[in-house]
Amino acid sequence: MRCLVTLPAVAVPGRRPHPNLKPRRRSTPVAILGSCRCGRRHLLGASSAAGLLHLVNPPCLAAPAIDPDVMLERVHPARPGWYEKLYATAMDKGMQSYEAEIAQYKSDLFSQLSVAGKNILELGVGTGPNLKYYASADGVNVIGVDPNMYMEEYSRAAATSAGLPSSNFTFRRGVGEALPAEDGSMDAVIGTLVLCSVKDTDMALREIKRVLKPGGLYLFIEHVAAADGSFLQLVQGALDPLQQFVADGCHLTRKTADNIKEAGFSSLSLNDVRMSSAYIVSPHVYGVAYK
Image (tube, rainbow, N blue to C red; front, side, top):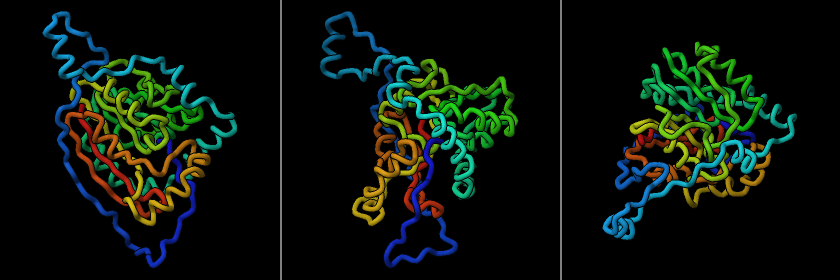
């Protein structure tokens, strides 16, 4: 988890918060047709007939592999040590009310994941708040990816608390645009509050698909832009530059649900919900996508 809610709540004119506000949910199963099933590299056919078919229906070519360390320095060069350490501490201490509210949604989401003996990559592992939901299964191996080196101490402690042997947890500095994993090596990829902070959302989603095995799962929870024309969308637009500065590149105005829908997964279950504990980022989407 990379996003930290740091902006103050904003009162909405004429709106009175209800003390027992319940999130609004919508479950929308989406079937993605015509998705790209090509591999990471495509070999053009040798025959003229095959070449003609490529001209008529060009293949979906993935970007060439880029060294994860090179990409890390390109899109998220190391910040001053004091900043990254302070941010990691703030993430550990400042997200408790949010985690308490979203706990039921996470429980429902991770219940769909059978992880015994599986290889799992968590993108934006942060301080490891998700590990308690899935890392206690027998034989599970977890790669936690985060650009902030100071997250390792917290995420390792969370893994130990969840019952995951230290030998089954690997922390790697990295970014979503070039994941440190082989093609088709992961049974599941997990990302919560992370696509708001990557430089290139579509590239990160392509990387998630690349490392997943056929039929593998991508489980996500993301805050998204408010509805077009709403007062909240206006507020998000005004505060977005400040949020990016104080929250390590977090964007308030991304329409991440659209990116996920268009990423070419074979099927997708998508839900939306509003979180009352953080008004500025209250619109969320969560769900499961299948490669």
